[in-house]
Image (tube, rainbow, N blue to C red; front, top):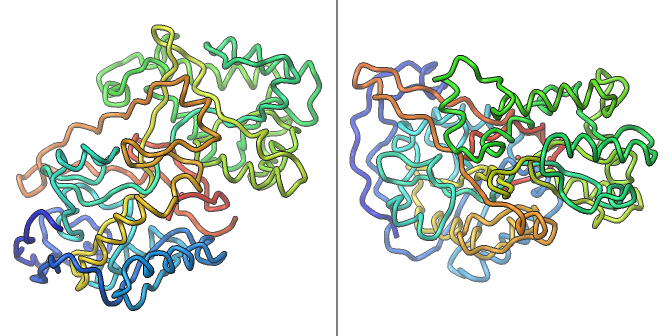
Length: 427
């Protein structure tokens, strides 16, 4: 079940504060516990999840019931919904008590993965079945598998756009502006485009267009090599120029300092606004808000970044949280069975209106029209420097999402930051 026995590591002496910050790149948090490789799922299992909403609404109870039905020797599965997931789990990783299966915190860097997580297999072999493994792989081994894939673009109210005479995706930033103006001219209660400016994370969603504008998966890495990132043709120039233009042309809310994230979901659902620049993770929340307001959830649709290369749209795609196995777990066989079952049989990615991490996985209905028009690209990771053990610091990749809570919402592309869990996405 596991590719190899985990090698014994020498425990380095480090301070508690260093471990707490998860910056012990040269230490080994390993221990001598061998994986249970007999392949028989049984006994008890503890799963940590940031999706507190799905714990509270009973969704995880259904998952557990289905999993135990398939593996009757599993006696109990405890699912812990963790508020402030990143902070709490990072603290718990200072001990051996961080569940059997958990979403790997964004603050864990690739060189730290072997110290805290069990290898799941050879990356090259696993990539024959799964997408977006690079983020949680190290030295040819994969330590996590994403539970869902997100794409970047624009969530919009299709009914409103069609009533304004728009039936095709805009292919350039200017066409995007023209379409928003057409929506405004038709008459709309609040604004064609809503920025959610007051909640600063929302503006970072525009960075999801980086790489898509020029179909360049190395765009972010190449930014460090240029002194002129804001040209008219560059991704940054197009993105920031479009933000400027939508505001300058009066196509956004009148007072950006009073925007309301929760309220914006209803506004889009009923058609009082027509579009927001957000990742595809937002679709189910907008649909739910539409339904709650008595509108049609089917009005919520998704469009690509308004830019084409060689006549084709491109969109940045990447995995959300990755499930991994605690290297100290005493039930690794069952933990691996949970991960495999979750990705193959739970239906989670479809329920979240996201892409399956499986290469041949299903596409949710809300993204079918979008996927028919785009080519997916995955942003290449930053070149890896030598580890600090080699006397050179390993660059730390900042977590791409702020902490999620349960409020009412959770890749990797360098993915844009995500809202607090007033959004409702991934295990």
